[in-house]
Image (cartoon, rainbow, N blue to C red):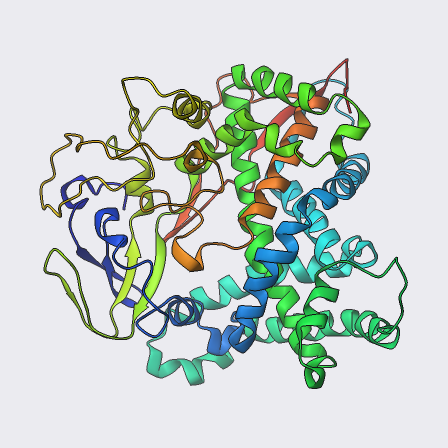
Length: 476
């Protein structure tokens, strides 16, 4: 998928385990991203890709509630959560991280999965469950088990799957995890429902409460659906966030010059304990934001914008998309396209910070924008010449959480990842806290750990070690 130069402005097709996929270039995706769900469906595409009929990886009728709560409650409570998450992160490091008095090898990815599970759990289910090993096991393993189940089922043709499902033990494990989650959540939900009329100022303010409050009266004691929503929330947040954080650690270990740059920024922002609770503290980590976005650019997934055509669509280049067509965009190809990112193979941790600075102080020479399309007119050309520049975008276009036709790591349109703001806060909090405490590097002569690529997914190495050493002057 990364070797797409000859097709990058064209619609083309590839074969996958689930049939033919039609690849849409960024110059045309703008015509599709605003179409209604009954014309171009993200829900149907995701449900089919995840084989939700068997794996339960679908929010079904409650997907709109889930999205609404992530966009509103989770996002609006971000600043209030930061001191709580910092406290939880400190607990995790004190209990699960080595002392690192000297250079100490440590496997990053397994730790990050546990750390993000704890941090996300603190916001989603509260401290009582977030520190429970059983809850962590269920919330972490649900997505892994489901992914394995999907992979195994994909080896069978669709007509065989109703029978083949009984040959996939992971499907039984999914049902078992759902039952375990329900058993853990039921007493908490019941206790809260019993005190629902209370005016207690200490009333819980987490996802359990938000989701319960959003349900109609007849579903408030549907413990199964609430357990399922929590596990779906975990499945969509823990692994994507921990993977990106791990990639950032690998990149920091390789690009050691960035450690001091980001450490100085973090030390300036978090100058005292009170600063961890200030509303704009995380937002001030602009160089950190740029570094994470650059790491995501080079280590992000292979494809994006998964959609299923429900009604006929005609594109401006003459392409006709009949109902039933499965769409993707070539995310890896876009991320390595020099028309959006000059010297795309070079890791520049300050790439987006510099673009933001230039945008805030316009100069006669405008940088190439990663949020615009490569051409205002559809073209089959594979030439690398840059198109005429459009009006410059706002500096916010270069933030980690921004999305655009050529900036799709968090998706695109109304179905863009609603939890990306929370994830971005988590990642920057973890990185700032670690940098203020530790130096890190790879062993002498070691290259950056290679990612694991399987079909159309990419994830960081689970076994690679990074050397950590506690700093003499610890700010936090």
